[in-house]
Length: 366
Length: 196
Image (cartoon, rainbow over all chains, first blue to last red):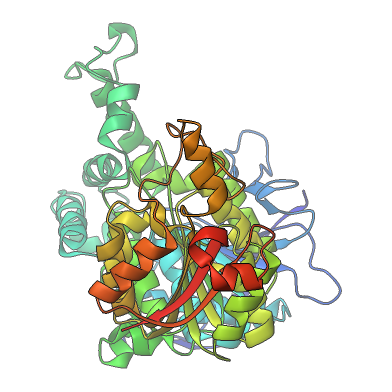
């Protein structure tokens, strides 16, 4: 598999949904496979809220495989020997694209808390500029899980003639009050870290790591299923030799501490807030008088909507609601519910029925 | 689905109509209707392998246990519902038919005829009969509400399900003067177009 990584500077303004404008912006991307001569074998994969452009493969020694490595690769579900796969770090992220941890071209200082609010539509618009830059004719498929699935849906709505297929996995057309509440608890934990400094912690060379860690620990629980946690950890006590700190008793505590710690090293607190806010505000029907059926009437893409039985964060009713609106609008669409061992995170893993069905969708007749 | 059955349904479906096929299998009937009648079609299926096949065939499919979710498809402007060889598998066929007629104003129902003479004589041996339409053993069959043509048409009469059109087929999937004259004895399968 040919892995290519690049930071692209777009020396043109982009107007954001909030009304703010970035006078220029950068997108960090990774691509896998080769664009064919007709430029019609491209697939866009969109990351979930804490993901990045690194979706597959290993470029440098010691690097972890990308977040969808089980799905993307030569001979895999999204077969990079046939398709040219594009993955983008979204605006507001912290992995190389313009965001709180990048330099503002106006001030030549880190954006920090001054990076404007971003939305799913803003991301789609930036990805559209990327599509033109890469001289890709259209996407054979736009795919993603969770917040990535919401981007796939928004693509089908915003640019109907540029998307042949949209795979909307473990996603929703709007998130629930409970989802927003969980996001707000996480944001509150981050904001109340004494190192947060109103979001301008970088000026003092500090990081609100404690808050970020606790927010991630909370979030991580919501991505797993109760059954999966029971199977994996049960009530097993943590081996004293490998305890992350003395307060830990059970394996599950140690695991969450470890995952939270790792995340707080790698991720940015302002990005966390921006990305979760983009998730909260996602609502493709808001330009259509809150009428999702009207909103879907322009869609030309075929939709593949999937939920996982163990996902309690984005339960199957969310996926079904998308398809019911799609049927009413006469949009070609399938809804499938898969067995998944990993709760909301199930979309990341290759399981036989899920992988085969997604592959069939990508390779199906038009 | 036999070619003759496919032809009958194709004749009854209007061009560019919106069709839902309950128990759509691999989606081949919908695929045929899309190419011959330019319909917008959705299949309902609960078997993962068949769902995979539908999607490979480019057919829109909804994963759903028909026994539980027929009511979800009301108010979706379907012109026609198709239920081929599955009405006898449902837990409550009468209620299912009432619901289907709320999903779409017209419904195609196909039915294996338990009154067929081969099954009648089979029963004379003292054991549950089987045929090419009904091959499974009694303990393995999904057909929990088998009936004869006479039974079904009586139900339609008492419940005011109007039979607009009907075709009786022998076990070769053909019409004949025998099946037309004595359907409840000679037809292996009946196909109905039902409305309210």
